[in-house]
Every structure is written in C-alpha cells, then in structure tokens.
Length: 125
Image (cartoon, rainbow, N blue to C red; front, side):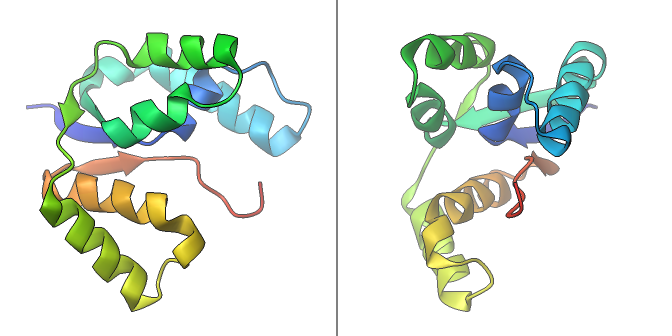
C-alpha cells in the first residue's frame, strides 16, 4: 500500500517556476523536479482547496502551470474540524499567527490521516 501524502503549495510552485538564482531555492527546485519525475508514483498524492487557492494566486501564467500539475490530484475536505484544529495549533503558539494557512495545511493532513505532509517551507527563504 502506498503512503498517503498531502502536498503543500510550495511543491507545485517549485516544480513549475523558473530556476532561481538563489542557491537554496534552486536546490529545492531541482530536488522537487527529481522527486516529481522519479518518486511521486510511489505515493498517493492529495491536496486541499487551500492549495488550489494559493496556487491560483499571482501571475496568471505561472498560476495556470501550477494548477496544471495539480489538476488530477484528489481534494481533501476542509471541515469544521480542520478549522478547529488549525485554531488550536495557532493558540498553542507553536506556529505564529501569521502562518495561519500553514496551520490549516497541518490540520487538513492530520485529520485526513495523511502519512506525510510535504513542503519546502523555510523561514530563511
């Protein structure tokens, strides 16, 4: 049985964006492309409407590319329990309030029993 993976928005962003001149971001992009091409079929991939909404923002051409790679991935529901857990995560102080969407991604993945949440979030980038 394949592991269930929730993809956060940085994955389609790194997958479809122009190569960065920043070495750390360029490394993330290269690893993301390699994983997507060689390893993604080893997992059951999922997203939520949060990912679709974030991927839809910004430059229309870039957004269209991000949405193209997400097109066939199943959407996990954002339930009242997701909002409640995200609020609890924020209230704990472990994630800053400015990262409310990140708390929601964590809540979606946790409540839907995902084995992994894949992201490239890094406060230094």
